[in-house]
Length: 113
Length: 111
Image (cartoon, rainbow over all chains, first blue to last red):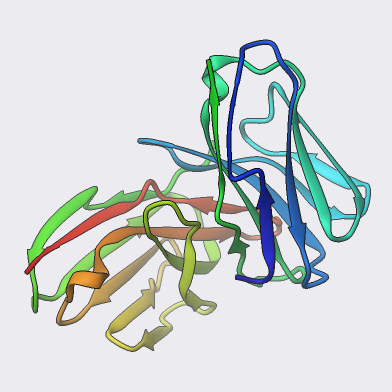
């Protein structure tokens, strides 16, 4: 949907290691978002971007950082992964401001042992 | 933070039955979205609503934007096995770039 590719799709790593997830979009959408999905919590916003090099925090941003050096890529980094960050991570994009809907990638399943 | 109360959390229905679910909030939204998520995939947009009172259909799905702008409803008519999945609502807070999501309704259809 909306040409969104997340990589990797699955990853298992150890506590304390750095992890970077990539979201790549081909639709030239201005806005990009990172969510995590956990049972009982639905989708919670981690960080979002409203343009190249313009990012802001969501509701669960602690322990995560993001970067957007070009329109098509939005990176999510866990500087030192913890077991509480085991989750499924989704990237979403939308074309512009106002009330345009978001479209999602297929997710990255991250397990931190 | 902001929350959307989505109900029911889960439901089992017989094939051919109609299904209703809703989302409510104490906040006012200027857009409501409904998504469906299948296992191992990302949410897929079903219906978008932009005006209070708006009623929009997509095949057997019908959604409404509540008059108070604090709620939205999704109905599925004549359910079929492929309707199985998790349905999410999302509301866009006025003046923000951020959508708030409900916790989902898990639908299971018994053939």
